Image: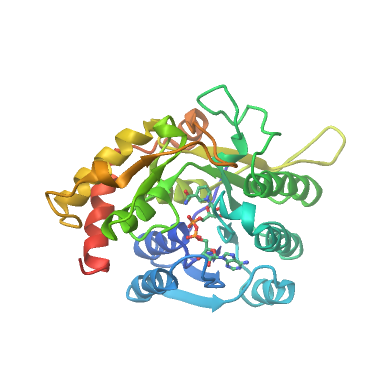
Length: 350
Ligand SMILES: NC(=O)c1ccc[n+]([C@@H]2O[C@H](COP(=O)([O-])OP(=O)(O)OC[C@H]3O[C@@H](n4cnc5c(N)ncnc54)[C@H](O)[C@@H]3O)[C@@H](O)[C@H]2O)c1
Protein backbone atom coordinates (compact mmCIF):
# COMPACT_ATOMS: atom_id res chain seq x y z
CA UNK A 1 0.00 0.00 0.00
CA UNK A 2 1.21 3.48 -0.83
CA UNK A 3 0.75 5.84 2.13
CA UNK A 4 -0.56 9.32 1.19
CA UNK A 5 -0.01 12.19 3.60
CA UNK A 6 -3.07 14.46 3.39
CA UNK A 7 -1.15 17.59 4.43
CA UNK A 8 -1.36 20.32 1.75
CA UNK A 9 -3.28 18.05 -0.59
CA UNK A 10 -6.05 19.22 -2.93
CA UNK A 11 -8.98 16.84 -2.71
CA UNK A 12 -11.95 16.85 -5.06
CA UNK A 13 -15.09 15.45 -3.44
CA UNK A 14 -18.12 14.92 -5.66
CA UNK A 15 -21.56 14.78 -4.04
CA UNK A 16 -20.18 17.15 -1.38
CA UNK A 17 -23.62 18.38 -0.30
CA UNK A 18 -24.74 14.78 0.12
CA UNK A 19 -24.98 12.88 3.37
CA UNK A 20 -21.64 11.08 3.26
CA UNK A 21 -19.85 13.76 1.21
CA UNK A 22 -20.65 16.65 3.55
CA UNK A 23 -19.60 14.66 6.63
CA UNK A 24 -16.35 13.70 4.95
CA UNK A 25 -15.62 17.34 4.04
CA UNK A 26 -16.29 18.41 7.64
CA UNK A 27 -14.00 15.72 9.06
CA UNK A 28 -11.17 16.59 6.66
CA UNK A 29 -11.41 20.37 7.22
CA UNK A 30 -11.46 19.82 10.99
CA UNK A 31 -8.58 17.40 11.24
CA UNK A 32 -6.26 18.36 8.35
CA UNK A 33 -6.13 22.19 8.39
CA UNK A 34 -3.70 22.41 5.45
CA UNK A 35 -5.97 20.51 3.08
CA UNK A 36 -7.82 22.24 0.19
CA UNK A 37 -11.18 20.80 -0.67
CA UNK A 38 -13.11 21.34 -3.87
CA UNK A 39 -16.68 20.09 -3.58
CA UNK A 40 -19.06 19.61 -6.45
CA UNK A 41 -22.76 18.81 -6.22
CA UNK A 42 -25.71 19.47 -8.53
CA UNK A 43 -28.06 19.96 -5.53
CA UNK A 44 -30.78 17.89 -7.20
CA UNK A 45 -34.18 17.61 -5.55
CA UNK A 46 -34.35 13.81 -5.22
CA UNK A 47 -34.90 14.65 -1.56
CA UNK A 48 -35.43 17.85 0.45
CA UNK A 49 -32.81 20.29 -0.83
CA UNK A 50 -32.94 22.28 2.42
CA UNK A 51 -31.03 19.41 4.08
CA UNK A 52 -28.29 19.70 1.44
CA UNK A 53 -28.20 23.48 1.97
CA UNK A 54 -27.99 22.96 5.76
CA UNK A 55 -25.05 20.59 5.32
CA UNK A 56 -23.24 23.17 3.17
CA UNK A 57 -23.84 25.79 5.88
CA UNK A 58 -22.17 23.49 8.43
CA UNK A 59 -19.16 23.20 6.13
CA UNK A 60 -18.94 26.94 5.46
CA UNK A 61 -19.12 27.70 9.18
CA UNK A 62 -15.83 25.84 9.64
CA UNK A 63 -13.77 28.17 7.45
CA UNK A 64 -10.76 26.43 5.93
CA UNK A 65 -9.86 26.05 2.28
CA UNK A 66 -13.21 25.05 0.82
CA UNK A 67 -14.52 25.75 -2.68
CA UNK A 68 -18.00 24.71 -3.71
CA UNK A 69 -19.02 24.26 -7.34
CA UNK A 70 -22.65 23.69 -8.17
CA UNK A 71 -22.66 21.44 -11.22
CA UNK A 72 -23.26 18.06 -12.76
CA UNK A 73 -20.52 15.42 -13.00
CA UNK A 74 -22.18 14.25 -16.24
CA UNK A 75 -21.09 17.60 -17.77
CA UNK A 76 -17.75 16.56 -19.25
CA UNK A 77 -16.51 20.06 -20.01
CA UNK A 78 -17.15 21.19 -16.44
CA UNK A 79 -15.26 18.19 -15.03
CA UNK A 80 -12.29 18.71 -17.36
CA UNK A 81 -12.18 22.41 -16.42
CA UNK A 82 -12.26 21.54 -12.71
CA UNK A 83 -9.33 19.13 -13.05
CA UNK A 84 -7.44 21.60 -15.22
CA UNK A 85 -7.96 24.42 -12.73
CA UNK A 86 -7.44 22.62 -9.40
CA UNK A 87 -5.36 19.55 -10.34
CA UNK A 88 -6.62 17.47 -7.41
CA UNK A 89 -4.23 14.85 -6.06
CA UNK A 90 -7.05 12.85 -4.51
CA UNK A 91 -10.56 12.38 -5.89
CA UNK A 92 -13.46 10.96 -3.87
CA UNK A 93 -16.46 10.26 -6.08
CA UNK A 94 -19.61 10.15 -3.97
CA UNK A 95 -21.98 11.90 -6.39
CA UNK A 96 -24.52 9.42 -7.67
CA UNK A 97 -28.20 8.85 -7.90
CA UNK A 98 -28.78 6.66 -4.86
CA UNK A 99 -31.79 4.53 -3.97
CA UNK A 100 -32.83 1.08 -5.12
CA UNK A 101 -36.57 1.64 -5.51
CA UNK A 102 -36.28 4.98 -7.33
CA UNK A 103 -34.15 3.27 -10.00
CA UNK A 104 -37.20 1.26 -11.03
CA UNK A 105 -39.25 4.36 -11.87
CA UNK A 106 -36.47 6.79 -12.86
CA UNK A 107 -33.72 4.84 -14.64
CA UNK A 108 -32.44 7.72 -16.80
CA UNK A 109 -30.82 9.65 -14.00
CA UNK A 110 -28.88 6.54 -12.86
CA UNK A 111 -27.31 6.21 -16.30
CA UNK A 112 -26.52 9.93 -16.39
CA UNK A 113 -25.00 10.38 -12.94
CA UNK A 114 -23.67 6.93 -12.10
CA UNK A 115 -22.33 5.84 -15.49
CA UNK A 116 -21.67 8.95 -17.60
CA UNK A 117 -20.73 10.99 -14.52
CA UNK A 118 -18.32 8.33 -13.26
CA UNK A 119 -16.88 7.87 -16.74
CA UNK A 120 -16.12 11.62 -16.85
CA UNK A 121 -14.30 11.32 -13.52
CA UNK A 122 -12.25 8.37 -14.80
CA UNK A 123 -11.35 10.18 -18.01
CA UNK A 124 -10.29 13.25 -16.05
CA UNK A 125 -8.13 11.07 -13.75
CA UNK A 126 -6.54 9.63 -16.89
CA UNK A 127 -5.61 13.03 -18.34
CA UNK A 128 -4.79 14.75 -15.02
CA UNK A 129 -3.12 11.95 -13.03
CA UNK A 130 -4.19 11.59 -9.41
CA UNK A 131 -2.55 9.80 -6.48
CA UNK A 132 -5.76 8.05 -5.53
CA UNK A 133 -9.31 7.79 -6.82
CA UNK A 134 -11.76 6.56 -4.17
CA UNK A 135 -15.37 5.99 -5.20
CA UNK A 136 -18.63 4.82 -3.68
CA UNK A 137 -19.90 1.42 -4.57
CA UNK A 138 -22.67 -0.28 -2.59
CA UNK A 139 -23.66 -3.38 -0.66
CA UNK A 140 -26.43 -3.73 -3.26
CA UNK A 141 -23.89 -5.29 -5.65
CA UNK A 142 -24.30 -8.51 -3.62
CA UNK A 143 -27.86 -8.83 -4.93
CA UNK A 144 -29.61 -11.82 -3.41
CA UNK A 145 -26.41 -13.74 -2.68
CA UNK A 146 -27.13 -16.44 -0.12
CA UNK A 147 -23.70 -16.68 1.49
CA UNK A 148 -23.22 -14.30 4.41
CA UNK A 149 -21.37 -12.32 5.51
CA UNK A 150 -20.77 -10.76 2.11
CA UNK A 151 -17.13 -10.83 1.15
CA UNK A 152 -15.39 -8.87 -1.61
CA UNK A 153 -14.20 -12.31 -2.81
CA UNK A 154 -17.81 -13.32 -3.60
CA UNK A 155 -19.24 -13.34 -7.10
CA UNK A 156 -21.40 -10.26 -7.68
CA UNK A 157 -22.72 -10.73 -11.19
CA UNK A 158 -26.42 -10.86 -10.42
CA UNK A 159 -27.68 -7.36 -9.55
CA UNK A 160 -31.39 -7.11 -8.80
CA UNK A 161 -31.76 -3.38 -9.50
CA UNK A 162 -30.42 -0.91 -12.04
CA UNK A 163 -28.86 1.00 -9.13
CA UNK A 164 -26.85 -2.08 -8.17
CA UNK A 165 -25.92 -2.65 -11.81
CA UNK A 166 -24.52 0.90 -12.08
CA UNK A 167 -22.45 0.42 -8.92
CA UNK A 168 -21.01 -2.88 -10.11
CA UNK A 169 -20.32 -1.19 -13.47
CA UNK A 170 -18.36 1.51 -11.64
CA UNK A 171 -16.09 -1.18 -10.19
CA UNK A 172 -15.57 -2.72 -13.64
CA UNK A 173 -14.87 0.65 -15.26
CA UNK A 174 -12.41 1.55 -12.49
CA UNK A 175 -10.64 -1.77 -12.96
CA UNK A 176 -10.18 -1.13 -16.69
CA UNK A 177 -8.87 2.40 -16.06
CA UNK A 178 -6.54 1.20 -13.29
CA UNK A 179 -5.12 -1.40 -15.63
CA UNK A 180 -4.88 0.76 -18.75
CA UNK A 181 -3.67 4.01 -17.19
CA UNK A 182 -2.18 2.85 -13.89
CA UNK A 183 -4.68 4.92 -11.87
CA UNK A 184 -4.73 3.82 -8.20
CA UNK A 185 -8.41 3.27 -7.43
CA UNK A 186 -10.37 2.00 -4.45
CA UNK A 187 -14.09 1.22 -4.47
CA UNK A 188 -16.01 1.21 -1.20
CA UNK A 189 -19.12 -0.89 -0.78
CA UNK A 190 -21.10 1.02 1.84
CA UNK A 191 -23.73 -0.80 3.93
CA UNK A 192 -26.92 1.16 4.88
CA UNK A 193 -25.40 4.39 6.16
CA UNK A 194 -27.50 6.36 8.68
CA UNK A 195 -27.21 9.27 11.10
CA UNK A 196 -28.04 12.95 11.71
CA UNK A 197 -28.92 14.94 8.55
CA UNK A 198 -29.04 11.69 6.62
CA UNK A 199 -31.15 10.84 3.62
CA UNK A 200 -34.93 11.26 3.96
CA UNK A 201 -35.52 8.44 1.45
CA UNK A 202 -34.03 5.86 3.80
CA UNK A 203 -36.21 3.86 6.21
CA UNK A 204 -35.10 5.35 9.56
CA UNK A 205 -35.78 8.89 8.24
CA UNK A 206 -38.93 8.23 6.18
CA UNK A 207 -40.43 6.16 9.03
CA UNK A 208 -39.82 9.09 11.37
CA UNK A 209 -41.49 11.54 8.96
CA UNK A 210 -44.46 9.21 8.50
CA UNK A 211 -44.94 8.46 12.19
CA UNK A 212 -44.86 12.18 12.98
CA UNK A 213 -47.49 12.83 10.29
CA UNK A 214 -49.67 10.11 11.82
CA UNK A 215 -49.24 7.88 8.77
CA UNK A 216 -48.60 4.13 8.64
CA UNK A 217 -45.12 2.76 7.98
CA UNK A 218 -44.71 -0.25 5.72
CA UNK A 219 -42.31 -2.91 6.93
CA UNK A 220 -41.25 -5.01 3.96
CA UNK A 221 -41.02 -8.79 3.77
CA UNK A 222 -43.16 -8.86 6.94
CA UNK A 223 -40.11 -7.70 8.89
CA UNK A 224 -38.01 -10.71 7.87
CA UNK A 225 -35.10 -8.60 6.69
CA UNK A 226 -31.65 -8.10 8.14
CA UNK A 227 -29.79 -4.85 7.54
CA UNK A 228 -26.22 -4.03 8.40
CA UNK A 229 -26.75 -0.42 9.57
CA UNK A 230 -23.54 1.60 9.57
CA UNK A 231 -23.25 4.89 11.43
CA UNK A 232 -22.05 7.90 9.44
CA UNK A 233 -19.04 8.66 11.68
CA UNK A 234 -17.74 5.13 11.13
CA UNK A 235 -18.13 5.52 7.37
CA UNK A 236 -16.28 8.85 7.42
CA UNK A 237 -13.45 7.42 9.52
CA UNK A 238 -13.23 4.46 7.15
CA UNK A 239 -13.17 6.64 4.03
CA UNK A 240 -10.56 8.94 5.57
CA UNK A 241 -8.25 6.02 6.29
CA UNK A 242 -8.79 4.46 2.89
CA UNK A 243 -8.00 7.74 1.09
CA UNK A 244 -4.55 7.63 2.70
CA UNK A 245 -3.73 4.13 1.48
CA UNK A 246 -3.64 3.80 -2.31
CA UNK A 247 -3.11 0.40 -3.92
CA UNK A 248 0.52 0.00 -5.02
CA UNK A 249 1.58 0.49 -8.62
CA UNK A 250 3.39 -2.62 -9.85
CA UNK A 251 4.51 -3.91 -13.21
CA UNK A 252 3.58 -7.39 -14.39
CA UNK A 253 5.81 -9.90 -16.19
CA UNK A 254 4.40 -8.61 -19.49
CA UNK A 255 5.80 -5.15 -18.71
CA UNK A 256 2.30 -3.71 -18.29
CA UNK A 257 0.78 -2.36 -15.06
CA UNK A 258 -0.83 -4.75 -12.62
CA UNK A 259 -3.95 -2.68 -11.90
CA UNK A 260 -3.54 -0.70 -8.66
CA UNK A 261 -7.10 -1.56 -7.78
CA UNK A 262 -8.95 -2.46 -4.58
CA UNK A 263 -12.51 -2.84 -3.31
CA UNK A 264 -13.54 -2.97 0.37
CA UNK A 265 -16.74 -3.43 2.32
CA UNK A 266 -17.51 -0.82 4.95
CA UNK A 267 -20.31 -2.06 7.17
CA UNK A 268 -21.06 -2.62 10.82
CA UNK A 269 -20.85 -6.39 10.38
CA UNK A 270 -23.78 -6.78 12.77
CA UNK A 271 -27.05 -7.14 10.85
CA UNK A 272 -30.21 -6.11 12.69
CA UNK A 273 -33.70 -7.46 12.23
CA UNK A 274 -36.07 -4.82 10.79
CA UNK A 275 -38.60 -5.22 13.60
CA UNK A 276 -35.90 -4.73 16.24
CA UNK A 277 -34.70 -1.69 14.31
CA UNK A 278 -38.24 -0.21 14.30
CA UNK A 279 -38.54 -0.92 18.04
CA UNK A 280 -35.26 0.88 18.84
CA UNK A 281 -36.15 3.78 16.53
CA UNK A 282 -39.56 4.14 18.22
CA UNK A 283 -37.98 4.20 21.68
CA UNK A 284 -35.39 6.77 20.67
CA UNK A 285 -37.98 9.01 18.97
CA UNK A 286 -39.99 9.07 22.19
CA UNK A 287 -36.88 9.66 24.28
CA UNK A 288 -35.86 12.62 22.10
CA UNK A 289 -39.44 13.94 22.32
CA UNK A 290 -39.95 13.72 18.56
CA UNK A 291 -43.02 11.60 19.34
CA UNK A 292 -45.16 11.64 22.51
CA UNK A 293 -44.86 9.01 25.29
CA UNK A 294 -48.28 7.58 24.52
CA UNK A 295 -47.76 7.22 20.73
CA UNK A 296 -49.56 4.10 19.53
CA UNK A 297 -46.92 2.50 17.29
CA UNK A 298 -48.91 -0.69 16.73
CA UNK A 299 -51.62 1.33 14.95
CA UNK A 300 -49.06 2.84 12.57
CA UNK A 301 -47.23 -0.29 11.44
CA UNK A 302 -48.12 -2.49 8.51
CA UNK A 303 -46.25 -5.67 7.61
CA UNK A 304 -46.18 -6.04 3.82
CA UNK A 305 -44.60 -8.25 1.13
CA UNK A 306 -41.13 -7.84 -0.35
CA UNK A 307 -40.54 -5.03 -2.88
CA UNK A 308 -38.95 -5.58 -6.30
CA UNK A 309 -35.26 -4.66 -6.26
CA UNK A 310 -34.96 -5.18 -2.50
CA UNK A 311 -32.82 -7.79 -0.80
CA UNK A 312 -33.56 -9.63 2.46
CA UNK A 313 -30.11 -9.53 4.03
CA UNK A 314 -27.10 -7.25 4.02
CA UNK A 315 -24.14 -8.29 6.15
CA UNK A 316 -20.59 -7.05 5.61
CA UNK A 317 -17.45 -9.09 6.03
CA UNK A 318 -15.03 -6.30 6.93
CA UNK A 319 -11.96 -8.44 7.62
CA UNK A 320 -10.03 -6.92 4.69
CA UNK A 321 -10.74 -3.37 5.82
CA UNK A 322 -9.67 -4.32 9.34
CA UNK A 323 -6.44 -5.99 8.32
CA UNK A 324 -5.42 -3.26 5.84
CA UNK A 325 -6.57 -0.11 7.65
CA UNK A 326 -6.85 -1.33 11.26
CA UNK A 327 -10.38 -0.08 11.45
CA UNK A 328 -13.79 -1.57 12.04
CA UNK A 329 -17.08 0.37 12.39
CA UNK A 330 -18.35 -0.02 15.94
CA UNK A 331 -21.23 2.38 16.68
CA UNK A 332 -24.24 0.43 17.93
CA UNK A 333 -27.65 1.04 16.38
CA UNK A 334 -29.24 2.57 19.47
CA UNK A 335 -26.47 5.15 19.87
CA UNK A 336 -26.67 6.07 16.18
CA UNK A 337 -30.45 6.34 16.13
CA UNK A 338 -30.35 8.43 19.31
CA UNK A 339 -28.09 10.95 17.59
CA UNK A 340 -30.40 10.96 14.58
CA UNK A 341 -33.50 11.53 16.75
CA UNK A 342 -31.79 14.37 18.64
CA UNK A 343 -30.75 16.04 15.38
CA UNK A 344 -34.25 15.59 13.93
CA UNK A 345 -35.86 17.29 16.90
CA UNK A 346 -33.68 20.37 16.49
CA UNK A 347 -33.72 20.50 12.67
CA UNK A 348 -37.50 20.23 12.39
CA UNK A 349 -38.10 22.29 15.57
CA UNK A 350 -40.35 19.57 16.98
N1 LIG B 1 -26.15 6.14 2.26
C1 LIG B 1 -26.04 4.84 2.02
O1 LIG B 1 -26.59 4.01 2.75
C2 LIG B 1 -25.24 4.34 0.84
C3 LIG B 1 -25.08 2.96 0.71
C4 LIG B 1 -24.35 2.47 -0.36
C5 LIG B 1 -23.78 3.34 -1.27
N2 LIG B 1 -23.96 4.69 -1.13
C6 LIG B 1 -23.34 5.57 -2.12
O2 LIG B 1 -22.58 6.55 -1.45
C7 LIG B 1 -22.60 7.78 -2.19
C8 LIG B 1 -23.09 8.90 -1.29
O3 LIG B 1 -24.37 8.54 -0.81
P1 LIG B 1 -25.22 9.47 0.14
O4 LIG B 1 -25.99 8.59 1.04
O5 LIG B 1 -24.36 10.54 0.71
O6 LIG B 1 -26.25 10.05 -0.92
P2 LIG B 1 -26.72 11.57 -1.17
O7 LIG B 1 -27.82 11.47 -2.18
O8 LIG B 1 -27.02 12.24 0.11
O9 LIG B 1 -25.43 12.21 -1.81
C9 LIG B 1 -25.15 12.22 -3.18
C10 LIG B 1 -24.98 13.66 -3.61
O10 LIG B 1 -24.61 13.66 -4.97
C11 LIG B 1 -25.31 14.70 -5.64
N3 LIG B 1 -25.42 14.30 -7.04
C12 LIG B 1 -26.19 13.33 -7.57
N4 LIG B 1 -26.00 13.25 -8.89
C13 LIG B 1 -25.08 14.21 -9.21
C14 LIG B 1 -24.48 14.62 -10.41
N5 LIG B 1 -24.80 14.05 -11.58
N6 LIG B 1 -23.56 15.61 -10.37
C15 LIG B 1 -23.25 16.22 -9.20
N7 LIG B 1 -23.79 15.87 -8.02
C16 LIG B 1 -24.70 14.87 -8.03
C17 LIG B 1 -26.65 14.81 -4.94
O11 LIG B 1 -27.20 16.11 -5.06
C18 LIG B 1 -26.29 14.47 -3.51
O12 LIG B 1 -26.08 15.63 -2.73
C19 LIG B 1 -23.49 7.52 -3.39
O13 LIG B 1 -22.67 7.15 -4.47
C20 LIG B 1 -24.33 6.35 -2.97
O14 LIG B 1 -24.78 5.60 -4.07
C21 LIG B 1 -24.67 5.21 -0.08
